[in-house]
Amino acid sequence: MGQWILQITVLFLFICRNQAKRDPTLYCSACRAIVDELNHSIDQVDPKKTINIGSFRLNPDGTMKDKKVPLARSETHLSELLDGVCNSMSDYALHVDPDTQKKQYIRFAPRSSGPTGDFPDLNNFQFDGPEAPNALKFACEIIVEELEDDIIALFSQNTEDAQKELCNIVSDYCHDASKRNDEL
Image (tube, helix red, strand yellow):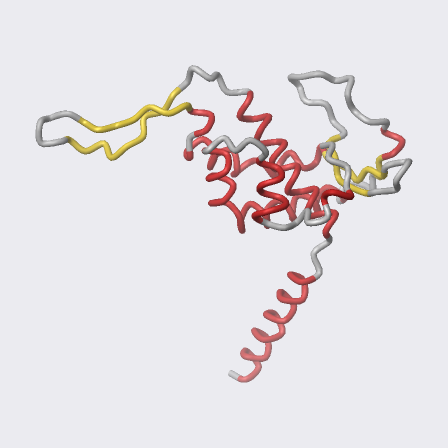
């Protein structure tokens, strides 16, 4: 029994220690990548598509109170997008700005739909092998798990600057964002 308590205590201390040592570049970049990927996915949805929301109960007069909202910004659709948003983290790599030497993870792979000419020079990226995107994906999964309700609320309200709101104000992962490059 005593050994079990000791193992749980060691595990708890290990988790707490790892929570305190979050890499600010990694988590800020993951937060920004989440916003970027969600915005791109939302833009891909036909704006004419709607979804019925409401109680789906019949009123005493036999009518049903429901409301149609755009599918792209519905909580249901946003939840589905959040389930897969971290899978695209393999399209990001650590980029070192040649002028300022600032590091951040940015997208290096072009999307199948969209412009392909606005990507930075690949010479400024650091590709550390096939396991490198796992750290960004892990950070993404932690952020989505911790902030899922906040992310859905921000995107369902169509917040004007969701990246600043989520990454600087809600989560404080990019607290020194004024010094960082805002490209993603």
